[in-house]
Image (tube, rainbow, N blue to C red; front, side, top):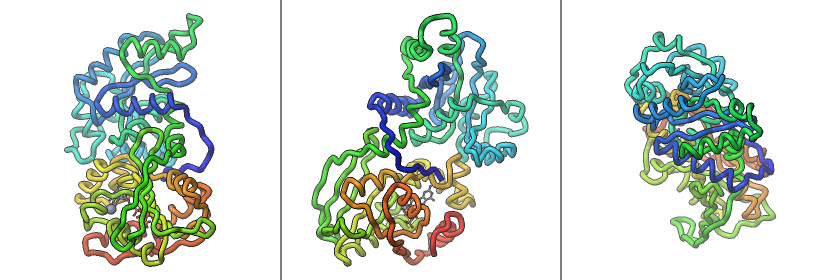
Length: 402
Ligand SMILES: Nc1nc2c(ncn2[C@@H]2O[C@H](COP(=O)(O)OP(=O)(O)OP(=O)(O)O)[C@@H](O)[C@H]2O)c(=O)[nH]1
Ligand SMILES: [Zn+2]
């Protein structure tokens, strides 16, 4: 599970902007230039949005840079995805959340093969034994940033990366700073450039920087005195909502719930999970006891996004459990962070909570973010027949309290 502790990490608006733009470019299939502070740079493209034309564009761009650096394009998979594909050697990399790379040293691997390596819901269009000779090391910082960008874009966590010999290589013979050389090169090729440092700071910086943007009274069934307050992350991402029920007393521990968005369960009433029951149940309980705060967090699918959750459901229909499905896609079983929740509570003036949850990770993560969790309040609902295995898996794999 990726968890971040509360630290005061400022992030410049220009850094947020360059990461945002890079995310948008990856989502539309374009490549971006990622660089390190010491002047190494690579072209990066998402495997999910790749097609043969964009792959050959990337190859021709690398041909324009010459130097001593190996510019062979590589396919990056997370170690989890590589292990699921059948590369057993990737298993040892999982604990260090390593990145696994295959060399794309000739035109023999087409975009469709790359996509089936990245996407377990595709028909497998590859043979691991044929690909094994292509296993290759990849530049660590650039590769980790490339995978991080695809995750931030809520795409499959797989990327194409090709180093380019500018910056460290090119600047060796000139007085110009490597980063300036890199950015100029990107500009000349109409590419966005973004630094590994900005990508690393982004998640935490965006999570910390929340601005209250709107508030309104919304009378709810079982909780008529409810106000909804919207908080916008400074990265321009989807807003998180706080439902303030009644008039909670900031000097006492407030009954609180951190509820992760579930479009299928909360809105459609899906019976695959228990989210709808938990959402409405929490509102009813808070209405009955007179006050509470429900944080509705935009972290759909335990942080992998709705489209990847739908893919995860397809894998569950083929036999995986909810944690294994995430892992087959190349994600951690749970990718959520709770720093935005802690920040919302702080901005609303609450430092102590009684937390409605069965998830021990929520309790420990919120405490690490500086909120005192004075009690864990159980939040169980009977199985509806369809979600029994899901509830059992949450207990077995995530240690949820029964
Ligand atoms: N990836 C994935 N996400 C799922 C699946 N089923 C539900 N979810 C998501 O899991 C999250 C459930 O959130 P919560 O109910 O807040 O969290 P929880 O970990 O179950 O903990 P508590 O409900 O507080 O006990 C939502 O974001 C759902 O969209 C699934 O099979 N795969
Ligand atoms: Zn759900």
